[in-house]
Length: 471
Image (cartoon, rainbow, N blue to C red; front, top):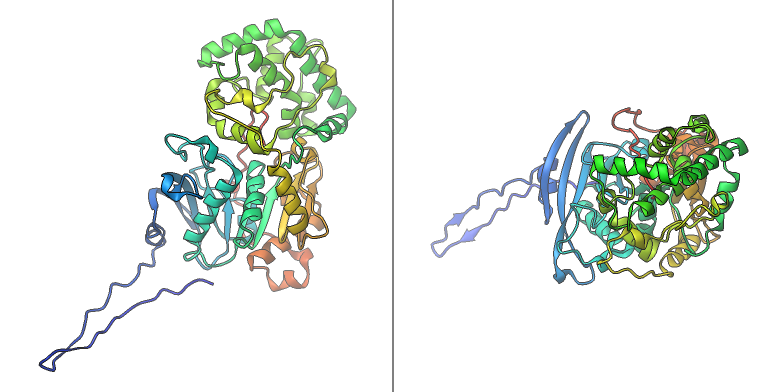
């Protein structure tokens, strides 16, 4: 419930020795302006406010402890944004698991419930990085504790129901947050969230690539990938020119050859992650394509800059977590036998060597076990043709009011809107119920559920970054 503003008139009767009575002046009323209320939160500071019709949008910094177990060990400023509609509306806590956009946008659950949205930048993604950075403090519990503190700070202002959400690594983040702080949120909507329970067992990915789409499409993509490695020498010359023009270097991954193979091996994965089966005919004919045509197509799908020092630096926190807790895929690619020199390279290759890393094989197993036995008011949405969905979250008999949905033909951008009608209505109805805003008509008949806010092409745009093998 929204807490009513308390207007306090303090009247003190002071009876002096002469028997006179004095009345104190009234205290200043608490501000009702949302910016003032946000900035009254201890540790909160304003970066900027941006206007947007129907909302107020704030980019903020919030002071967090580097180590939630030892708050005295220093602090850092974490960037968050608030898309404010009304304190009488429910709230969505969104994170991509990476950087936060500083332009107004709305996640699908925010549209479905017509609510406010708080978005958090994941710790150690710049500028939300302590200086100096103690990388041992980058783990899923510390990040969940960041969210918990933000929620506790904003709950007195936004008193209605809260949902956690995010896509890909953001969906993983929303799941981990619920696992560590199950009393905070009223529901969780996690999109396309991988669940790498056993990091050294990736056969489900191999099965996916053996069966996704049509055989004609798979053969066409595999041929392009194979031909790129057959023509390694001329394509690496084009790559060297590309790197020189873009001032790209490859010290972290080792050299241009390691980067070249990394990008080529990502081709088929990247196609299915971001593309659709209908896009198969855009792939060049491997037998007749020129070197430049092959090079340009690979750049379009995967991005030749992906394993440069310049691009990797932005994603160091992800690769660090992949190599310490999250895990990473390692697929066989039998059609490339005899042509690869390094195979799928481990996350260690993409993190500067002065940052120590040690993998914890128990982290994901514990989360997976908790989800199977304790999930409550949680939902996962996957795309049928998204490779990251090969290893996904699953729920067991201990789960309550929790669901797994798959959008047919969808990729890594799968949404509730892409589900079959029956599932779409059910998912929408549950999201609105968890948020406490399900209309009476939907409570009586969930098949009538629709988003409460109309689609906004600018606010609800999907920002997908098409580069490299990252969730």
